Length: 320
Image (tube, rainbow, N blue to C red; front, top):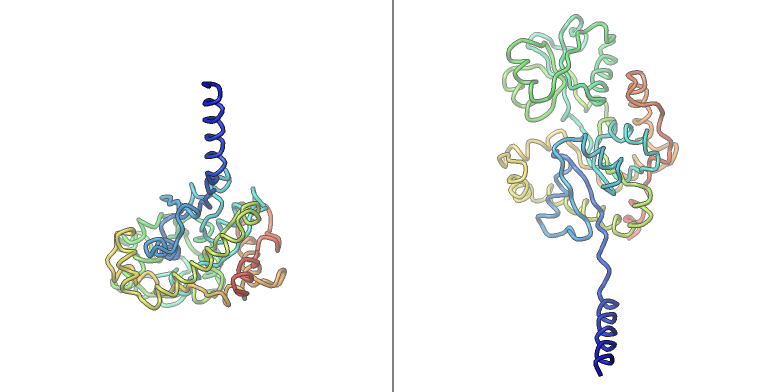
């Protein structure tokens, strides 16, 4: 009798175990704090993001994001194009599946009053972050001003020191962005170059591991759909969106909205234009130009191949 009861109990346990669904493996998506990534968190606030299936993982800076992608503790991450090129050197199986934002004036070169054009930077002290992006902005500005790097004194400064260095006369010009941009313009700084002069070149992208792309394709298509839904909400309901974003980024509503001046959030069609086309993809051309500079500075070893750009998720979304 006892043996019979034991067998029945065991069978019941096995039956229950067999009926329990397997735990869902989440897509872990890493970001650092940046206005261009906020639509992800806006979607979560609005209840559109299925958290068990898509988990947002926030880091304080881009360095741990890159490390987590290298260690495969993230399936996907938001990052700048230059960071994607750095990651690509160690992991050529990553794919850029979305252009999240394009800087159309958000990144600027500001100069002291009296310096009104790029050529007048000759012999001047110019501050910038020592990132590939900072170096790229300097390089493109010098090209436009028909100057060489040797014509200026380049000073490496983190973003949180830009305003003080400019105000105290330690530098004559600075490559910077919000909120320093607005602060220095109010102080009378001259805007002599910005990212609108080099359209399509300063972008943030969503990067996905190739194996995650194969394993979670349907869920990633849904994620892109949610992304575009959130960017539309931001445009159509800016005040409510800013109020939802405000507690996370610790800025006022007006400061939240100011971050999107000079920042374009491309829609599906615009994404397909820059990401589609294989060898002719516009973003691939931008990546090659950036890679040229990064190779000179020994930041990367190889140019990206066309396989880095993957518009397949966007095409699936468009077909629905």
